[in-house]
Image (cartoon, rainbow, N blue to C red; front, side):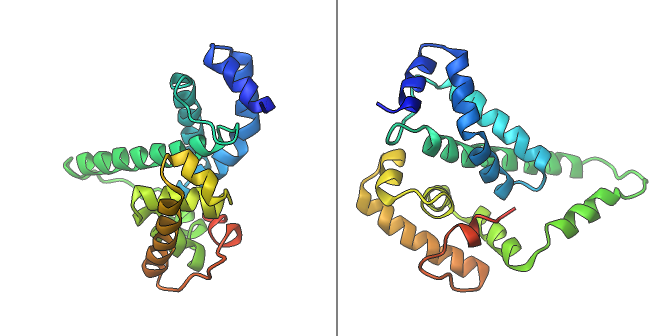
Length: 195
C-alpha cells in the first residue's frame, strides 16, 4: 500500500490532517488543469477549492488509481469547470435581459483578452472546451497529465480498449476543431500549456 493510499484510508475516516497531505501533494497539478481551462488565475483558484471540497465531501467514494487520487481529482476538475461555464452562461443570459447602463468599459477586459490571445494555444483551448466530456477527460488524463491508458481506464471505470479508441477519436476531434493536425505524440508541450 502506497503512502498516499494509506493517507486516503485515513481521509475516509475523516482525518483532516491526512486530507491536508493529499491537498499538498496534488494541489499544483489540479491548479494547472484548472488554469488550462479558466481565463484567470482567480477562477482557477476557485475551481481548485471546489474540487478539493468535493473530494472531502465524497471521500468515501473517491476511486484511487494505483493508490493515487490524482486521476479522480483531474476528472473532477473538468466537471467543476463545465459547471462554472454553465453558470456563467446563465448569468450572461440573465444580465442580457436587464436594460443597458451607461458606463465606461472595464479596461481589464481588453487586457485579459490580449493575455489570452496566443494563436496556437488559444485554438487548442477553444477546441478543448468544445469537446465532449469523455474526450476532455481522456485527453486530460492521457495527454496533458501523461497517465497510461491502463491508468485512465481504471480512473474512468471503462475497458482499456475503450480508452484507446476514445483517445484516438478525441485527438482527431481536437485536430478538426483547431484546424491543424496534431502529431501522434502530442503531449504536455502542446496541450499542457493551455492557459
